[in-house]
Length: 82
Image (tube, helix red, strand yellow):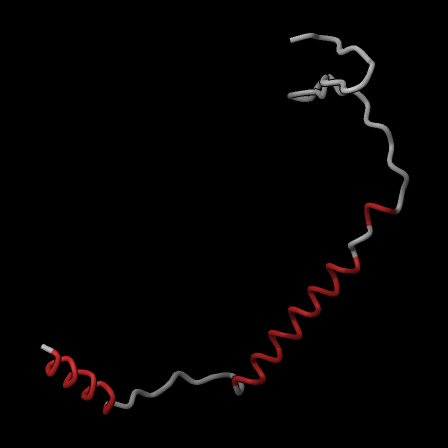
């Protein structure tokens, strides 16, 4: 069994398949991918502090929400006790 496997591996190694053509050398393709990812990272980092532009406003009760936050954790009493 092992000798048959070795024969198949040797026969496959002797066959030379033609590789698919590339549009550029592999280092150029890798460099272009790295440059594209660095550009995307720069765009992401430039929008990092968008939430800090304005002062935070107090959230009001919205009756149209699915589940409003009625779980008061202070001295205030909640509107429903369940």
